[in-house]
Amino acid sequence: MREIKRQTVWQKSEHNAFTDLIRFQDAWWCTFREASTHTSENGIIRILKSIDGTIWLDMGTIRIQEADLRDPKLSISPTNTLVLLATALYTKAPLKYYQTFAWSQYSNHNWSNPTAVAEPNHWLWRITWQNGKAYGIAYGTPPKEGLYWYEFSSLTHYKSYQIEKFDDEYANEHDLAFDEQGNVYCLLRRDITPAELSTGLLGKSKPPYKQWEWFDLGFRIGGPALAWAPNKKTLLAGYRRHQDPNQWLPQWTEIAELSLDGKVLKSIDLESGGDCSYPGLALEGTTLKAVYYSSHEGQTKIYSSDIELNHPSRK
Image (cartoon, rainbow, N blue to C red; front, side, top):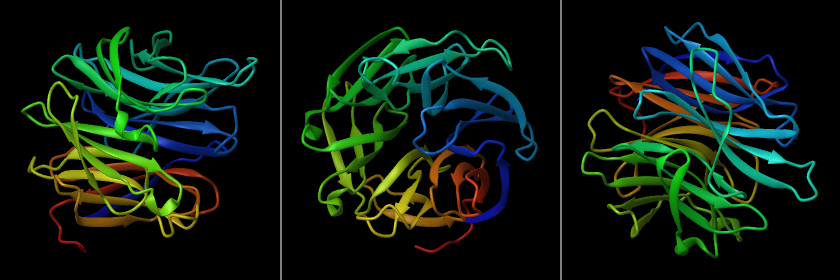
């Protein structure tokens, strides 16, 4: 595992962060949030496209008036349509609340009107398509709590249940990867008091996804991303790492190969620091392309990294 290419992708806004990446119709598509700061309430979603992975074209923005759009994610529907997911934070109403929305792409620059998905104050972090359905995990935001498994027959029709194991824990961000048998693996962030208990988990479940087995990674993560390695026997993961689980900084972006029981087999640290991470991952052959954000050069920028997976690396 070796980084063979790194570049700055975008730096036009004050704070460019919370990325995702997908390979769609022979091009790379990258999305992220633009805002004043990490926690400001003026976020919009920027979308970029690249044919060669080097030159990135601005495909425009998505915004909702009087809402802060956060953590965009990309997926490809069964009808071969690019779908964007993001959660809107409304602060102008009498009570602050969250609503996750989905947009479907009509053409390079044109997207549908937003469709509300999931319950209000259920932050649906992302969706992953499998056999014509979409699946994802939402976490409750005040006044709601808990972690919820969602199954979508379409973007407007879903059913959900609460994963009761996490009723007393603040489990939240995730990514999913399905194998050929329909089993699903889940990389999950937790934030628990005391912070030493805030270790990430790798979960496994079989259809109908009611029972889970969880493996402890042994360290704290944020902004998890998950994909299958080329061998289809191990997983590729990207996430934020903390030097000390009790402290926000120092932090950095790590890319790792995981066993199916949550052990780190190989890893590489991407050049990053300060407010950073939340990678998006997409595989092409034996090269993993990652996008992520970082503040290690002062301004919070979007970067991309090409990682050759067959090269030996530290364990």
